[in-house]
Length: 81
Length: 81
Image (cartoon, rainbow over the protein chains, first blue to last red):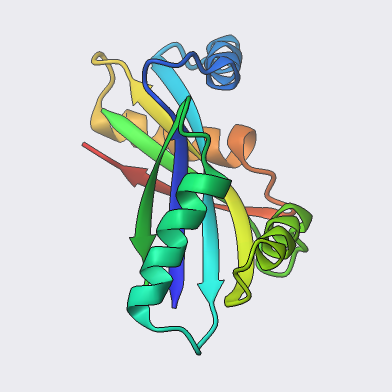
């Protein structure tokens, strides 16, 4: 079983890295790029000995407590198989 | 128009950051987590004055030349609307 956890800054939080990329793209000749926001994702492979229900619970907890900082970030969990 | 570009290390390339997260999760009591690979994504908003075709071409070029390092990374482009 594989899960993918997407973590991104909340839309109200400034993203200086994305803003830097946007400014660089302007300089490189892409004036049409209006906004860039960067996020990260984690592909997590779960061993075979775990029930789907347990895996879902574990991944939800891991996303909330380890991978994302709920103060400034939001996350989304997807199960790939 | 919004595009999302996913960038991840090629599967043959070692991912020390993902490996560190996997080891930390083992220590936190998640022995079932077999593997973690980290990647990043970019949400790119494209201004209204650009044709869909031009936007697709631009984003493909930006992904290949700016956002990803083709030597060790692979990328995938998705258009959200």
